Length: 341
Image 1: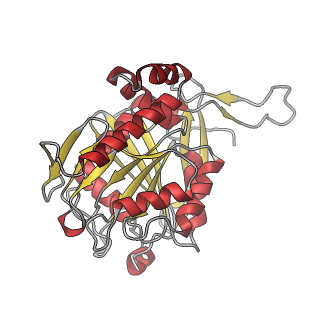
Image 2: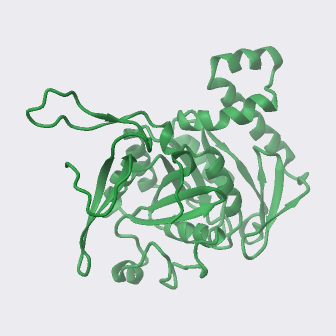
Image 3: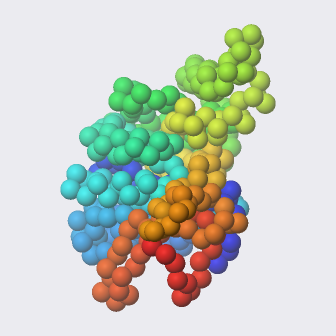
């Protein structure tokens, strides 16, 4: 297995309301990244994360499931969480170990009850967020409406990083607001750069201006420069986007369709560019050993620290027995290692 440095890892919990398309989004991302040869479909019961019989039969995720892909030199770990009310509490431990939440919103319905509930879970852990407006190819899909419901529901700076080209069945591409480029996608999800469309230019300009404002608001020195010049240089904008996202001062929004693969390769690019890596966390704190004079031990997210990990799920498998799923915080572990719980 290829080894990745801490800076080249992204851990995302995929959260949202039931039927927003979380499991299909994960499956489609895996396919676009080349992690799976076959494109898994929820309707066919062939997705990677909904692999147990009950989930396949009901077409509903019943627990947290895991998948990973490689995009360039970066490994992206995805935790597909349930969205239905009876199972949504499973999203909480997933968010405890994720470094970023990927909030999936239905383009037709906008923000729904369980979207708000899982958002509150993410608030508990002060977790940065990216938002995906999914199902942009559906009838009555409305990116603007979904965006408005998100801004109304959440007290956070929510700004599109991609804007849709076309709508409903004609949704065929996106405009990358950050890099100021436009793309159309073929049936395999491959992006082809096209000239920036003139239609909707005023929306792009307003979105770009709002993005610059939020970057300026995230730093006092940048705010002074913004007031002096009325804008920021490109050299000031791009390097500070990831910082604003990691500090939860900015939540990017992406227009995608997991059913047609439009927008997904740009989403992967931006996850690598802007989603925080584990090293952006402060140190984790353990419990003091009984009868010890030592303080609570701390561990930074580093290969150089002694081994530590956080177990967030235990699976009782009829064939493999008990499986503990953990997030390794520091150091390394090998087979047959003995560690203190």
